[in-house]
Image (cartoon, rainbow, N blue to C red):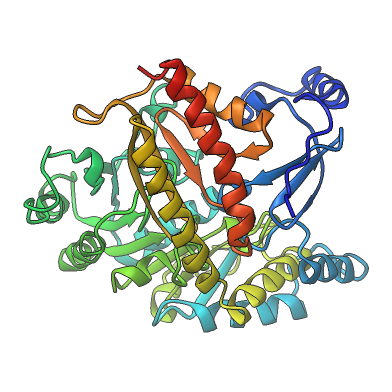
Length: 446
C-alpha cells in the first residue's frame, strides 16, 4: 500500500497560511530545506509526515539523522507521556537518568564507561574539548576539512568548510587538515593506487602543523554535512593511532553516525579505531534535545571538568530528557536497529546505483547503512558540481511529488528512520527517479 497521498497542490492553502503566520516574526536563518518546502507539518507516523492540508510524504530526511525510531514510535510516546506526568526538570538523580547512563555504557565502544549529559550537540562538543584540554594540559585541537561540529564559538573554530566565513573572530588553537573524501580527493589521487596518502599526511600534519602540543584530534568517523561521506575505514584507524602517538585524545563525533545509523552500533565500529571520547546526539534522543559525552573513568576525573558543576548543564539529563533518551537507546539496542539499517540501506544503495546508470549527472553514490549520499555533477569526468539552483529545484520537485529528501549543492543526503522498511524507502526513491528523469530530459543540470 502506497504511503504517499497528495490531496492538494504543494504547498497547500493551509500550509501557506501557517508558514505566513510564522514568518511574521520568525528570525531569518531557518534550515534551507524547511524554507524551500514551504509546508507546515501536522503529524508523523513511522517514516511518513502529514502536513496541515492532509498531504502525506515519505520522509527520507529523518530530522537529519535525529529521527532514529521514526515519528511517534509507541514506546517513545508512552515513555514521554509517563514522565511528563511525574517529573520533568531538575538536576537531582532520577530513575530514568540512572537507567540511561547504564544503558548507554552497555552499548558504548569498549572502555568508555562514563557519561555526562547535555541539551545539544554543540554543547557536548564544547564540553568534550574542555575535557580533553583539562586531561592533557594542552590547548591545540585538530579537526578536518568538511567537518561540522556545531555553531558555538569553540565548535565553529573546528569547521572545515567555507561556512566558517564571517563567523569570526573564532578561538585560536584549532587546525584543520584534509579528510579522506575519496570522490573529491584533496590530493587528486585514485583510491586504487593512492596507498592512503591522506592518512600519511594526517600523521605528519598532526605532529608538525599545530602551534603546540595537541590536546585532541576530533573527527566524524563519517562526515554528515559534507554530504554523507564514507572514508576508508583504515583512514579513521590511522588518525586515531596518530593522535595517540603524540599523546593527544581521539574524539569521535558520533552525532550523526552513532546509535546504529551506519549499519553498525557506531561509526568507529567499521574501523576498529579506539576513541577516548565520544560525543552523542541526534538519534540519541530521537527528537528530544539531548546530547552526551562518553569517556573513560580515568579521563572523566580530569579537573576542573570533574569538579562539582564543572561539567554540568541546567537542562542536561533532566528527567524528561532522560526518559526520552532511555526509550530511544533501549529500542535501538534491544531491536538491534543497526541490522535493519544495514539491510534496508543495502536495498537503497542498490537502487541508487541502478539510477546512476540511467542518469548521467549522478556522479557519486555511496553510503553505509542508512547514511547515504549522492552527488550530482555536470560532467562525470571533471566532477564539476551542478549549480545550487538545480539542487533546490530537485528538492522542490520531490516535495511536490511527496518525497522529503535533503539536498544542497551538489549533495543529496538520505538518513531516514532506522525503523524504515524497504518498501517505503523504495517508494520514495521512485519519486526521486521520476524527478531525475525530468531533469535529464530538460538538460537543466548542464
